[in-house]
Amino acid sequence: MSEKLMDLSSAIAAFVTDGCHLSIGGFTVNRNPMGAVYEIIRQGRKNMHLYAHSNGQGVDELVGAGCIEKVEIAYAGNGRFAPTCIRFKQAVQNGTVLVEDYSNYQMTLRFQAGAMGVPFLPTRSSLGTDIITEWGFSKELREEDPKLPDEKLIVGKNPFGQWADAEKLVFVPAINPDVTIIHVQQADENGTARIHGLPMADVDQAKAAKRLIVTCEELVSSHEMKLKPDTNQIPHFCVDAVVHLPGGAYPTACYNHYDYDPFFLKEYKKFASDEALYTNYLKDYVHGVKNHEARLEMAGEERMEAIKADPRTGYAINLDRK
Image (cartoon, rainbow, N blue to C red; front, side):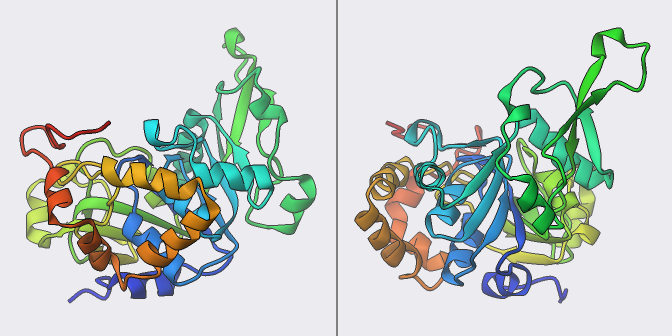
């Protein structure tokens, strides 16, 4: 058996520490590594620096539980359930979390730069906007943390003068998290991983990280992963821990396996909007269950059947999303 194959509790304990720079994959209500998020909260991690592209439930619960000190992100929202994540929004307004925002494309480039091993990548994105002038982290804070770049970004002259229509460019700094966590549909025990459907920014987030935890719906043989090698996005040598965790993205969606849970997300909106209700929510739904398997049992067979993916479309059909 591969040394990389671990249970979730052990993987989080081994790689996610107080104050670490953490990146989580997924996009809004799709393929958030929620099982890992709940385990981080249970283990009481604090003062972490969080990176995400355009995440929703994962960001909101980590922030709401008091695990996060700083966030770098393009967008935090759960679609119509919370156009802006509720606990995230309250934390920013209350000053309990510092946030620095970038455009969607800039966050993609920042993870890509980290994956490529280069210090920055150029773009035109955000020229003429307040993204350039409004910083979430001060110069003093950047000097105190060696993991942060000295500047949010830099507007500089195009070094190749023949492109006169690109006189100025925005140089965005690379991201190299201490640890990234992603949830995928398939992986083998050595770490080779496969994402079905849109990969979002997960592949670059994975390759940019110093350590990588992969949770997966299906743990398959290395032989099976080799039958269609062109569909494998994460090579085994990038991965430090593999966790077999069916339902690991719930209550967000995992294409070809299950849809997001609109019933829970509506409930969560009520919990997140009230301090007392949210305290009870964490007590009952997170700390009150032993692990993610027990959390899925709380949802119940009827609800899990309602969000089960149709094999033809990859998502639930006839699901009441209102």
